[in-house]
Length: 152
Image (cartoon, rainbow, N blue to C red):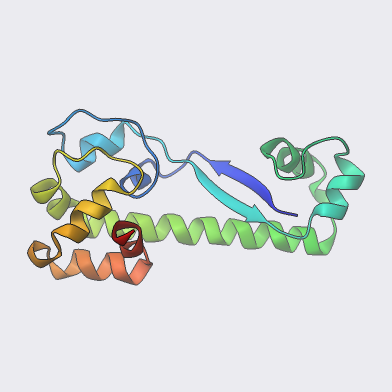
């Protein structure tokens, strides 16, 4: 089962994901302090559990996930492992985003100050300015795989 869990965490992550429109000329920290991130994580191996404990709810929904959490003690081992794997994936992604933001904050303020946060626009701006960026920013984005967002 692929249940989509939405996490409104790691406000700083808007540099790379969706966010709220920001006024031009705000620093990266100011833009991100007003933003919220929506992260989708797939939870696998819970179809059978959802059919038993949460009949009638759409399988790939937040409501279905919340229902399953109410029955956490009764879930199958496979479903519990799927949930644990999704939680680890979410945590690793948030850490990668945080690492990249810290490494790129000065460069984003210098070269992408007027770029609206969200949908990978700041990363795209950083990629376009690769020759001017500090190596720590370029390395962080490439190490975490976030560089690919800006290349698209």
